[in-house]
Amino acid sequence: MATEMYVRRLTAADCQCARDTFALMAEVFDEDAGPLGDAYVARLLAQPGFWALTAFIADTPVGGLTAHVLPMTRSESTELFIYDIAVLPGYQRLGVGRALITAVREAAAREGIASVFVPADDEDGHAVEFYRALGADAAPVTMFTFGAAAPPATAG
Image 1: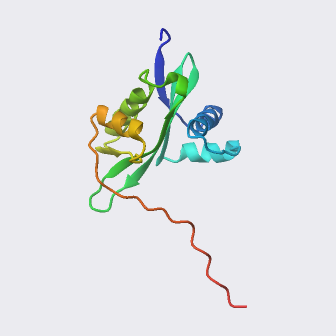
Image 2: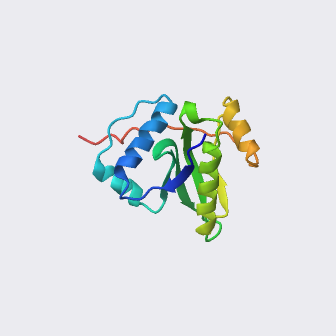
Image 3: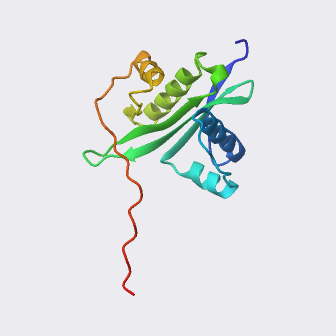
């Protein structure tokens, strides 16, 4: 592809770009996504523990990554949890995902974060092979999810 690709970490001033990136990610994952207001997106992007990166080609968002900084309790350190990474189908296998991972790892290193991790469903062979190709080590783990607990009954 002749046009140069670049990755940028979004800030609270990037509300429209963030909304576009989040919509792109929902589209790639085939998930329903509701509209996000400016105030919500600005608050989200202003949180130091929330990171959003967008990959651009010709100033058009083609991929995105969200991550969360997790403070550790075994040491005075943090780790970075990549929650989502998505690339539009027409731009996959062109280095966009690799650029997003490289950018987030470099940003983490600049902030003194030594460990970056990302979950991948075992059934998602493409994702598993992608992370392996980038040099990541697989860790055997089973993740469990819970729905919200029912609120306690109130005495009436």
